[in-house]
Length: 74
Image (cartoon, rainbow, N blue to C red; front, side):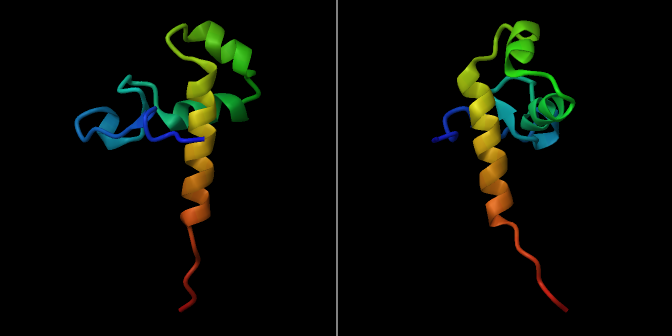
């Protein structure tokens, strides 16, 4: 999935955290809702401005960020 058109980062919005389509809803918010056992349907019901694609983009963004992490031994 290409999340680059959905996940936006603006320095003046939510302290530069990755947001969904320029809104004030962050990737972290969505991940926290999912980790708290909210279903995709519940999130979409609570936030009518979101789409299923937005939630998938958050997961793809998080997976990509995780893939880029690495450990350096000292």
